[in-house]
Image (cartoon, rainbow, N blue to C red; front, side, top):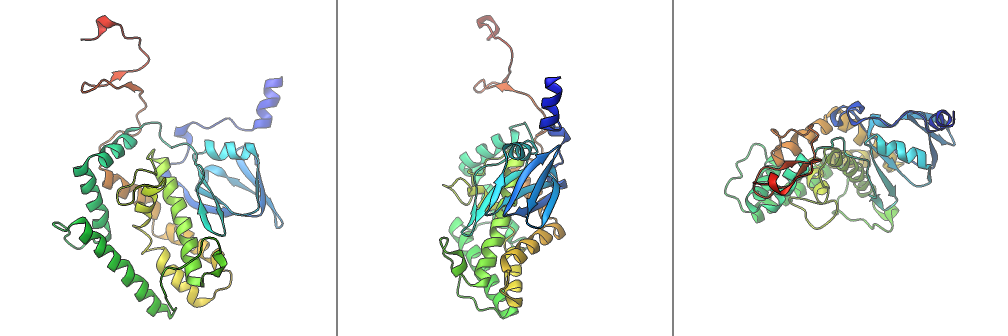
Length: 317
């Protein structure tokens, strides 16, 4: 009887990975602040001054938690078991602390990522693929990394200038103080919020696929290097134009308006589906069986051995 009571208190049992929605089938993100979050059955119960709502945790890729959040242990357990990435944010922008488990138990994607990052030839090929996504109609063969970086810098500078002229919003460059978020002008505040949302989505996709956010290709040295790599593929399409458009309308409540606009654009442009495809192409994992579950033992240059078996000296040849 005590076991039955304990199970009712905990709610529904922990879902198996195959029961969870795929990355490309989930909604992008939800932002919550100044609320208490608890768990009931398989849903998150969010209570704030406006009332109470229930949220199916596994429906989202990312749950962004802003200031004033009171989160119970059971709610956090549900978020992690649902394969959801959760990020904490403040006025200074995104602060990433942890994530839920990957939506695949197979490490094939991670092994391929490590192989590409550690092999200079494969690394360079992957970097060129990333730049080619920015310039789909141009031939980049023969350009050095320095030339590619310069070309990308000119592209981004041009986009900022064109959007500034288009919407009549003065632009003095990307300028903000992380320790005083409100001191930035409206367009810079909108850019920071939009980038934070995009970073959260990219982190969720990367972790759900079983990749390491720290093993970047163009960016290196930080725990979210790959996140910055992938996010840069979509900023010019999603974040920058929308930040200038909203700043041209009003500075009032621009942070909330930017979050809602980015969420809508992510859906309309099918960014999550494209992100999964682009990451697969960059790391060349189209042929990898990432759904198979098999624990193996490394065996040097020979084929790996099945785990869970006690090998004796006479078995080794």
